[in-house]
Image (cartoon, rainbow, N blue to C red; front, top):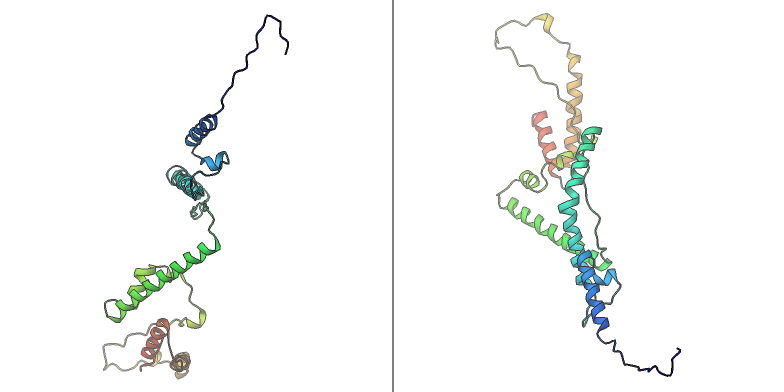
Length: 227
């Protein structure tokens, strides 16, 4: 620094107190306008005793989730519907990825709550069935709708097709027509069906416990063979 003999040099003390507070206020304003938490946008440590910034992140995730449902999802659904009709394919299901990953402890607690909820629902349906208020198939329909009908039935539980039996002629006094008489060997298929039904009945009766489908199958088989 160069000075003339006629110049005077005076040093004044400048205080920088209050500048960090002003900068923090500006960061809060920017964070508020952008919608991002200040801890995420500027990397500022959360202020306050025992503060982790979790509430700020949760509010941010809630805001993003609301915007997904209110703004993004209707557009995607309309776009998917148009593409599905154009390609003649089934309309897919849209589900957004979770914004926050659960820890192993949180996952186990959530699974435990779901299991307890399912057990409570099953106990409630069982109480209704035992009290005679509902039948098992009614409880299944109220709980699952038609989803159970979409489950394929294994081949070993499928009954063979039964041909309809012709009704007898009303004229009981009419003489039998030799042309319409059948060969006794033509009943071989019916006899074979009765033998298969008897074997299946014996197999079901040998079991200690039967499911609802097996009990229904046993009743139909006994009815078919005339028991």
